[in-house]
Image 1 (cartoon, helix red, strand yellow):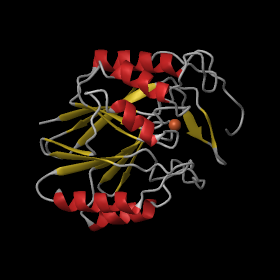
Image 2 (cartoon, rainbow, N blue to C red):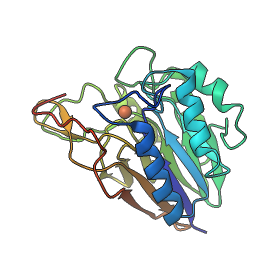
Image 3 (tube, rainbow, N blue to C red):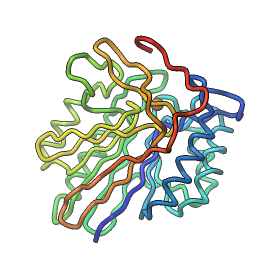
Image 4 (cartoon, rainbow, N blue to C red):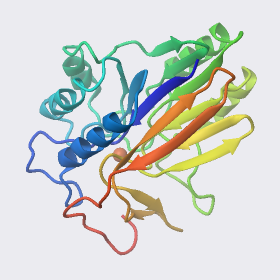
Length: 263
Ligand SMILES: [Fe+2]
C-alpha cells in the first residue's frame, strides 16, 4: 500500500485580505496552490507544517480552516515560529477535518507530528517532553514498519557555507535520538521556504516551498527567491521507499518585492 501525503507549509495568512507579506497577498497564493494540489493529486492525509499565520490572529486561523477544511477530510497540523498555539488549537478544534492526534498510522507507515516552536523565538527547539514523546514513539513503532517525522524547523542546514541561526537548535540531540533508535525513513519540514532533499544515512531530510513567498540561502543569510508558490506531494511506499516532488503554480505572486541582499 502506498500512502499519499500532501504537505502545505508556511501559509503566513493574515486576519484581513488587505494585509501583505513582502508585497504579497498570501491568501490568494494559498487559494491558487490548493486549487493546483487538489485538482492534480489524491492524498490519504494532508499535513500543514507551521507558520500558518503571519499575524498570529484568531481570524487568520479561521481563514485558513475555511479555505482548506473543505478540500480534505483528514488534516494534521503543527505550529511554527509565527504561530500562536492556543489560538490554533481553539480554532481548529471546531473543524472536524482538523485532527488533534499528534501521530498517525496508515498501512505500514507511522507518522509523528512534532512541535518545535518556542514562544517568542524564530529558531526552533524540541522540548524535553517532545524529545521524550519522540523516544516513546520510536520504541513503540520499532517493529515491522516504516517511520516519518514532520516538524516546522529544519534540523539540517540548507547551505553548509554558513551557520543557520534560525534552524532547530537541538538538532544534534534529535539526530542522536533517531540514530539510537534505528533511524527513520524521512524528516519533513517547512520554515526555510525552499525545496531541498538531502540524504543523510538512511534518512531523507525534506524541505518544502512555502505556499506564498520563497527564500534561498546566501553566503551570509537569506534572501527572497524568484520562484512561484508551491507545495509538496509525497508517496510513502509499502517497502519503505519515499518518492516526493514539489509542484508550483504558474506565476510569481503579484506584488512580490524582490530585494538585493539579505532579508
Ligand atoms: Fe515561514
